[in-house]
Image 1 (cartoon, rainbow, N blue to C red):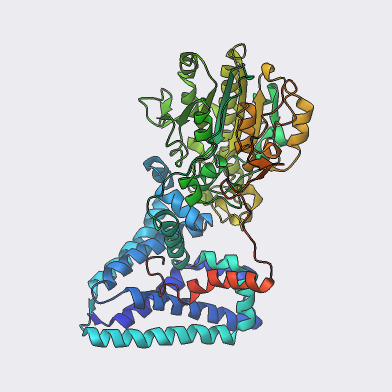
Image 2: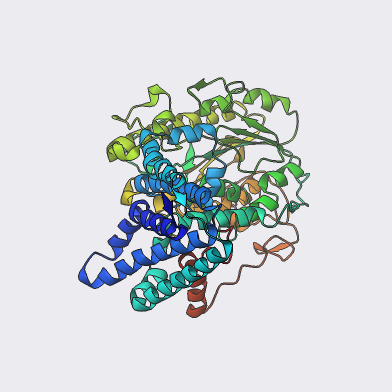
Length: 585
């Protein structure tokens, strides 16, 4: 059966709008109900999205590329539709980074019969039909002329619709701009382009050193042993230490810990949050490019002579531990506690021997947990920790009741409680030789069905607090001489991942110009000593120009400039998405 490219592109565009964008239109209808006054706008939105997709296919699909491009696009759209429809997630550039860095076990956790059905019915079958059809032959001159005509029609159609419903589209782009993030596959393609541009457009860049003056002063004669636990997807409001009704922290409540109940993450996904946690950059200035090209906290500590060890039971360190000793505890050859999947507790095995082998100097050990990694929460803990029942025993969270999902999630928190208690017990054994401390801080939070959302990874501006309000706990040994009242007072303040860099420097008494005492959580809580004094290069806690990003980024002052900035981000998705930067979309 012969079919023209134009007919095939139009049919594919209509199909993508009708079957692959149900989550997008569900969110749109929640804002613009299907009443008579909204009918014209809703129709314009559907037609406009069809025209944008038609424009995309027209400029990217030629006689020899139509079938492969359409096939890939249909499979991509089917995959995005599955995760959008079932987890209400948005595929932005940080989510793309998560996907790129996902390992085999994480992929396995996401596999399901339903996903395969989506891929089969919305991906493989339509792609097979595309290959079955025969494209009508045409000359390149005629093809070029046809594409020029279609491009004009699509652009005129979109601009005409914008003019026809200008009031609604002004609201759509200006007030409800987050809605566009659900368009499929346009926004995921935009996000892929943004990820590629941020990570590869500039080529290889030398790592920028920071804290080159870092050193431990001669007056610091005590040795410090700090274990920094990077949690995974742990919400602050599911820790009984923070007032949660369920006893999810029975062991930690027996320890002299301080819970920072107002801690907020730097991102909503591991690939973004973890590098920013260890970065000198505050959340507003942090980016994947900056963290990849600038040294981090571990580099500064190592330069000062601190022994560093990173043990990982998650995907990896997301680039943080590239220049320090690293051990992958997802491997049974290293982790003796692997039963189906390797347990976080296994990272504690052999740590005492490592500590004993460091005859002098301070020690910082980072333990990167599997923690509450979803959606298969039921896999994150041994059977004896399933105390809240019935627990959701599938990765298809929408097939479980909200209570079952929360039960499985809380069981994983309960296991983290036991893991942290054992970490404290290890530190107590070394309390006579070291000033010991444990810092636990989750990388991001998690949605458990609130507002129809699951998992994490929404763009920070639109993510609910559940994905940003994270659990964080400090334990300090007796030799630190902690002023508990002062630390509790600090815990009542709103804090963030921005504090971690400077707090660790303060605990270890590292003197360096990149240390900012105003961001050190323990600054006034260690009664027996003064925190390190910033070296020249900082005054009053403000970075000087010789430091990375010393001057705050300038913000647009006028509403007009802000609106133009928003339009610059939005309109390419709808109008010229694939004309200016084909690879970007």
